[in-house]
Length: 101
Image (cartoon, rainbow, N blue to C red; front, side, top):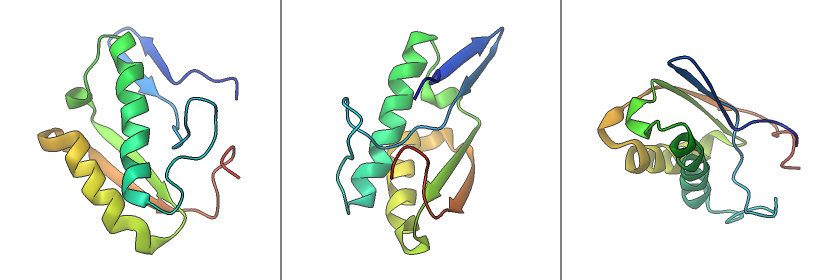
């Protein structure tokens, strides 16, 4: 979609929104929110490696789900990915994410 997934400016690293797509832009694990929720941070982690930053340095994340009932699976995936890093988190329910519909 023509954006940078991660940008470093000085000692600050900013990560853009990351959807749960595969390497060709298609959907990943349709209907399996837990697998989808683990995919996005995996993409972020790969991007952070390019800036020599680790996920344990993340201080804030925002997770968007299209259904509030999906949140427990997403929360479980976040705990598995981020472990004790425990970034501040803002879960949001949205109708759709641009680029995923």
